[in-house]
Image (tube, rainbow, N blue to C red; front, side):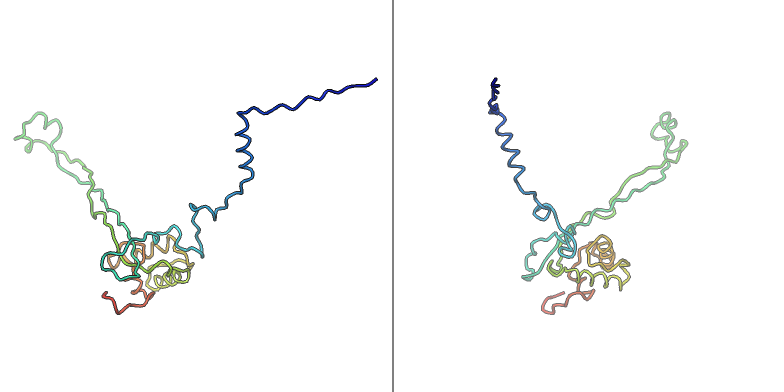
Length: 202
């Protein structure tokens, strides 16, 4: 006795599923993008010691600036102070019962009033700085050593332009009136980090 097996033909995919299958296949074949290829990922460390720091804010030189010089822009935020004062005021009952002419003679109470005032306005600063190619890890180590010798830095000599280094640089430059953590050319000369150009006016 012969047994016959009937083969069922494969079902065809619906036309609506074909674009989805094609997209999944292409996604599986596409190579994964490494962080180094992503332009939004910045690299820090010895290869790029200034990544993410304030030294990346370059601006065009002002009119009359020597060619080949580099300039940075920094913004000093406004300083706002909260002040609490004690003020003598007529009591609410006496003020309601008396007229304007009699309020000064009525009973007084001491009340505290708090308000804010601007101690220093927000200021935009533009000044010359050493050009970014100068800022190698060895140069940053020299900045840290120079600040340490002047009592402005007490951290490790790392060659990284990190937060403690920027805070120390701000403290040092604030002594001369520049409230910024970006190294100015004038302070770079004062720290002995770059040679003074006698062909330029100070």
